[in-house]
Amino acid sequence: MVNESGTQPDRNGTSFLIPRSRRLTWDLLWFHRAVPLCGHDRHFRLSTVAEARAAALVRISWPAIFLKAYAIVAAQTPQLRQIWYRWPLAHLYQHPHSVGTLTVQREHNGEPWLFWGKIPFPESKSLPELQKCIDHFMTEPVRQQFRDECKLAQLPTVLRRLIWGWNIHVAKAKRADRLGTFFLSTLSGRGAEIQIPPSIHTGCLTYGPLTEDGVTRVTLAYDHRIMDGALVADCLERLEQTLLKTVREELLQLANPVAIMDVAA
Image (tube, rainbow, N blue to C red; front, side, top):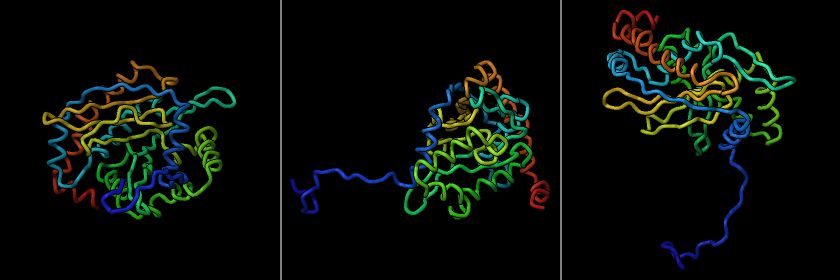
């Protein structure tokens, strides 16, 4: 058979090495297998939050809103800052503060890459400050913003896995700085939902698109070795209340020009 270009198609497939753009995701999935994640969801009614967001004089994205709310809940819930370690004996390590990790898709060297932007102390940052961090993840040069990930992707698989393994299983105090304490990934902007994001974190948050009534399904996937479903259900309820109260109040302040000037200063 001759194709439209008038040439004979090649009947043989082509083998090639794993592209660098897929290596970090491959590594994440490799270590994700050892984390027994279980996911629970709850429908949040966020119409009042959406209205306050629309009235704000500065653009605040939904990821910034959810990062702030989850970090506030994590500050009140030690289990969300705990990590399961299996060596030398099974034990838990509790981080003193949160480091939010946000999935970021960028075009790099002509290919789509997944990177992970880390934001320390998100509970103590204002929404504009969180938004500024996210904007940097999305707009700053990839080699500048995600330098360590780009270097890691260049290494052979054995060396990459050793570095991942050290950060996951050994580097307790540094693990939060390098990998974060919780994980946020969403495709709501594309009209889709993620069921359970693959992750090595104790808590993994995702949410779907808002309906016209301001309802969205929020899912919290968690390490079942550390907590049970009842606590996760309580966390989801507290997360919704935090969005409706604390975060909404901050959004309402951003509708005040004087407050915007104070933030800018």
